[in-house]
Length: 59
Image 1 (cartoon, rainbow, N blue to C red):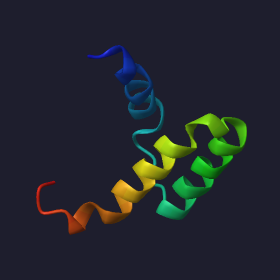
Image 2 (image 1 turned 60 degrees about the vertical axis):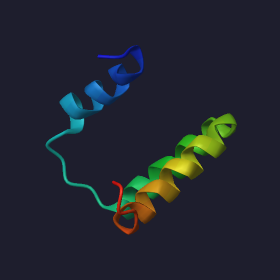
Image 3 (image 1 turned 120 degrees about the vertical axis):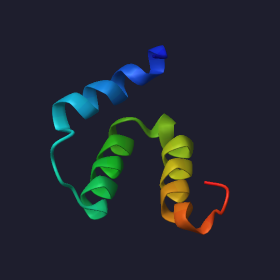
Image 4 (image 1 turned 45 degrees about the horizontal axis):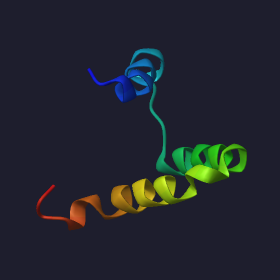
């Protein structure tokens, strides 16, 4: 596991059994950006990637 995966592992362990909506996720990402605006580019790229995931035949 990469060092950067630690947060993802914790998320899966703590919240993995929960069902969420994409609307809820978008709100949490907005909250995160309010606290950490320096991550805006990365979060926007991630959100765009998620939104277009089914449109990309290579994924």
